[in-house]
Every structure is written in C-alpha cells, then in structure tokens.
Amino acid sequence: MTGCQLPIEKDIPISVDSYLRKVPAVKTAVIHLVNEKMSKDDIEYLQFFDKLKPILIAKGYRLTNPAAVILRLEFGIKKERSVSVKSAIDTAEYAHPIDEPSVLPTTQYNRLDVYEKYITLTAVQADKAEQPLWKTTVSLKDYASDFRSAQDKLLYLLSHFIEKDSGRQISANLTDTEFYQRYTLNYSAAEASALFVTEPEMRRRYLHDLQIKVDKHVADFKKCGLTKKREVSFRISPFGTLPSFGFKETFNILGTPVKEKIRECVAKYLEPLLEPPHDLDTTQPMTVIVPAQ
Image 1 (cartoon, helix red, strand yellow):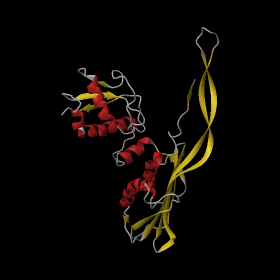
Image 2 (cartoon, helix red, strand yellow; image 1 turned 45 degrees about the horizontal axis):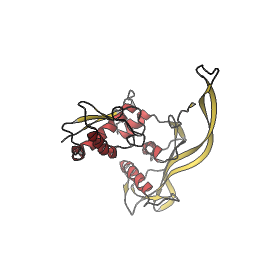
Image 3 (cartoon, helix red, strand yellow; image 1 turned 120 degrees about the vertical axis):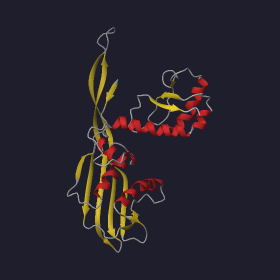
C-alpha cells in the first residue's frame, strides 16, 4: 500500500501586517523581549538575535542603552487548529490467485495540526512608551512545529517592512527563487534572475562548503593512508549521516581500487563534517575530493 500527499510547506502564503506612524529621528534602540516563556539568556533567543541584529543595523538602528527607541520583540510558534488532510492511497485488489493485483485508488483523511510561526516587532519612544512609532508582524502557517523552519523567510520579509505601512494585511506566496537569491545569496534585485533554479544551486553551495571543511581536515584524512587525492561518492540522510551501505553501491572511491580499511577511515572522518542537507534531494549521490597531503 502506498500513499501520496503534497507537503503544505511547498507554496505556503506568508502574511505581513505593518503600520507606520513615524520614523524616529534618533535610532539608538534597546530590545525588550516580551515572550512570556523565554528570556534573553535562552539559546533560542540568542540564535534569533544574531540574525535579527544585522537587519536592524541595516535600517540604521544602533543597539545601545540608554536608547531613544524601545523595540518590543515577540517571536515563536503557536498551535492554531487541526485540519483534515486528504491523501491518495493505492490499494491492491486480487482478482485471481495467479493474476497481478489491480490497483484501486482510495481516499484517506488524516487530522494534522496547523502551527503559526510569527515575528512581531513594535517600536515606541523610550520616553513615551504609550506612543508607538511603527509595528510590523510577519507570520507563516503550516504543519511544521518548528519556528526555525520558517525563521529566515520571516526575517526576509520583516527586513522589507520595518518602518513601512503595508496598507492592509498581505498574504501571498514567497517563491524559493526570490528568497534564496535575495536572502541566502544576498543578491541585489539587479543580480537576481527569474531563470534561477534553486535546488541545483543549493546543492552546489552545500558541496562547496563541505569541500572547504574536508580540505581543513587534511591531517585527519592523511591518517587513512591515501597516496593521492581521491573523489569519493556518498549518499547522505536527511539527518546529515552516512546511511548503512555496501561500499561498492553507496560509498565508492572512484579510480584505482582502495582497501576497505582505507574506505572505513575516510567514512569515519567524513561523517562528522556533514550538515543536515535541508531541502536537498537525498536520493542522489554527492561527491567531494579527499586530500592526501
């Protein structure tokens, strides 16, 4: 029995609701975290702050105390509701003991939880906290119970709506092409291309970063006994691990045959360098060059 269901994460509208009353003349600022169950010492906040800070600096804000502006920040995830999701299921019906089974489509319904990931940033005058200057809220709803799955897309739109008025709440799709070029690669609009294909570039960048790590660990790979550089081909799991494999099929060192002991050594030092391959096709093999000196 097999089933198929398109993931909600592909083509999900993101909402923006932004207000502007006044752009502050003096942009010294301090952040007040208003999350009830989080402090500024929590790792979730510290990691998020590292991504938010450059956006505020790019808008001219200087984080210092005393400050002319208080930035009230709330971010996170909350469960919204449960929805019924329709899936197509193939079921086998045996018409005769010696015949091939015929496949009949069957509809199945499952209940899935919907979660909202959001960022709200409100600027008020430090000496008149009751007078807001601007407020921006960005949010995304899907099935993933993980704020970080949406964090970067939310930050990308937040950066465009700070000190702006959206006129009304906007809900629309943010394409992977725009997001990856403008946010991840930091391309200007003039550099970005409508013909850009996201997944191959993400794959190329992943392997480029991995190759840099491998080259930095030349001393480790040298212990494996390689006499020259070797191209290794491997498959990676969604968790960034090397799955169980037979060396010939899955972890093949191309070229002159290499002893199994050497292959085991290469795998030992390669696996700790792997990062989870987010949004990459893990059914396709990857390759890097292992140095020998």
